[in-house]
Amino acid sequence: MEKIDEFRNTLAMPLSKLSIDKLVREICLHPEYLKDMYQLISDDKIVVSWRAIWACEKVSEQHPGWFVPLQDDIIQRLLTCRHDGSKRLFLSILYNVPVSTPISIDLLNYCLDHMLAPQESIGVQALAIRMAYRLCKCEPELLKELQLILENADTEYYSTGVKTTIRNILKKINK
Image 1 (tube, rainbow, N blue to C red):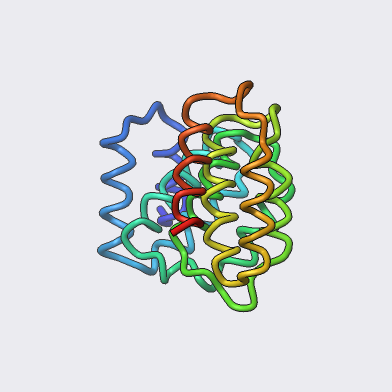
Image 2 (image 1 turned 45 degrees about the vertical axis):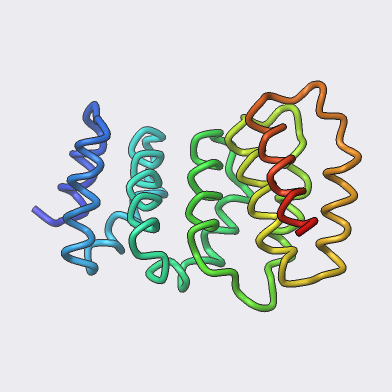
């Protein structure tokens, strides 16, 4: 059985964090397996796809450099993604990867469009704010624009998590 089939079978079954951690350890020990796991993020079964992204997100925490060559593809997937959990995980992977120069305007626009969008989950909003900050740090004039957007956000309607993220990012900008 090929590794991709083994991964697909594992991801199709009910999983726990321990199961994902086991897959992540295996990929970290055998970096060549990453391409098989990454290929599964396009699987027809949403549950397999989402869990494959979850595994990739966990790998990106330990080996962010492995995802640098995949960065443009991940951004394109994020831009067309409709699944909340997958959007959050794609943003998390991109957050773990070093910011490329020049910065991705598509990614920055996505973050600015979604960071305060009420239809987005709290996780997507908070990560979009944090990612926008990381991108804007590379361009001082963009950082001022982000600051204005966050300072003028009517936070009354946002969750505690989003309010806290806004407050923390504004503190970082004002340092």
